[in-house]
Length: 265
Length: 335
Image (cartoon, rainbow over all chains, first blue to last red; front, side, top):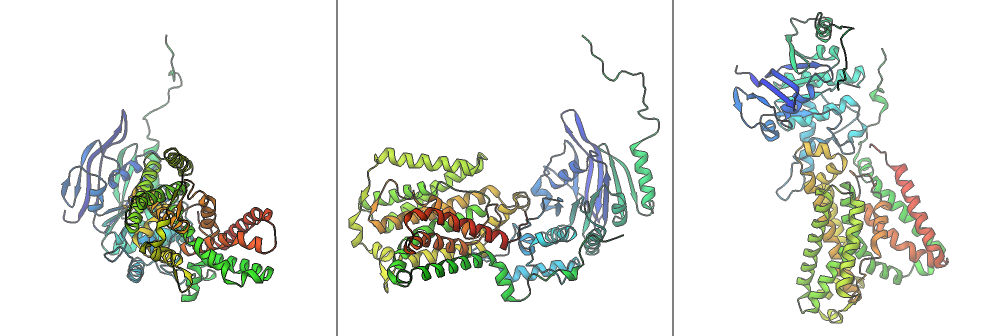
């Protein structure tokens, strides 16, 4: 259990009578990539927001490195080393890579003036660490000039600078081309090699199967399956399981004679 | 299977060489400088007698500083994604406090501090209303401008304050005298511009102003207090307006209830002519200062060029629109 980074036990979240999450168990160990799969409405975003401390769980407990943390919130999430990269909202696209990496945590002297050279060198070091280098751009390039995969690289470099142990990537490859997706995978592998962990969220099962070591399938607020790459050696097996989850035989069979809507006085 | 991204080799390295980097980083300001140079060349050709002699420049150097104290903080406000139309009244209000204190026999240096305090307090109030109530700063600050100006008029009943005694004070020599024949105000204004440029480009505050104006969600997620940064830009605007007010009173030895009124549109135009776009996230202090220079030369230039005053408005507008088109073409837009 020494390598267990974070663990959610029986976490539920309800909005009034509606359960968004109904008793979810999820853990991430050090140095692994966990793929979280699920359809729209399965509860992925609620789970991410709970991890980030933006949304409070209704019941359940959260353990960081084996110790339970009470009153979970955004600050505790950051202290635990969890950094979430939301797909579209992560970066300031008119600013340079350096400005984005150090956003909110600038390297300054004691009067608040920026150490421009040190920020530049540190940015280069971080970018090298995750294999995010190119002759085409430098730390002074404007993020708006970068491709979608490269932007994920900036966000990941920033997360590492912010001392993240667990980087949560929310749909990082959605709307990316194959080459761009491959770039993101390269960053993810570099992060794993450095001993950090990644929770990779997606609904493209091929992408998630390619990159993750372990899979968690979420369905209607519950964990429908937790499995490893060894058990699901092809994406097709995972897809077959997902189809089984989506259309389970026997459950919810349709009765054409049943009233759908009944109006009584 | 075809790759949809362009091959890396076809894209230029955007930052090769220190000179290229300087040009790219200061592209908007350099564009403004080009507009200024072309405009002055036309004026000099049109009327060399006026434009190659000192008096015109002397008068510009007296009035330009007041504009600079307004334009430079306004660049911060626009970069953070807001607008402030209340600074003319803030300027009038702070200058009023300065005039009242001097009239009451307070040392003018202390009176300036009093005015600055007033400007900052008004700025924080305006900022807090906009930010906490989530109002449109365009409308809310327009309302604040009318309210403050109205308050001044109600209390003073439209009477001005003459301060002829200012001329003999040390403060006047320091802030409004002349050094080697050059009006000393311009040196203070330039110091303010340089300091602000450092704050804008090389300080944590400036970096956060850019971040908030560019993507407030992202800035908030990175732990930046978005509201505090927004309010701080309004406070900085209040500080600049107060300084502008004090310098304006010292130039004229008089405070009028209308002090500051004429600067609303010219200061705004200077910011945008200078190359700061209206959508937030980026901007240029040097460009804004050059924009103020352009705007102050337009009026005297058009008249000295031999056109009647009837043409001033038209050419004012023409230069503003042409400058905006130039900047739009000069800068790629990423949002």
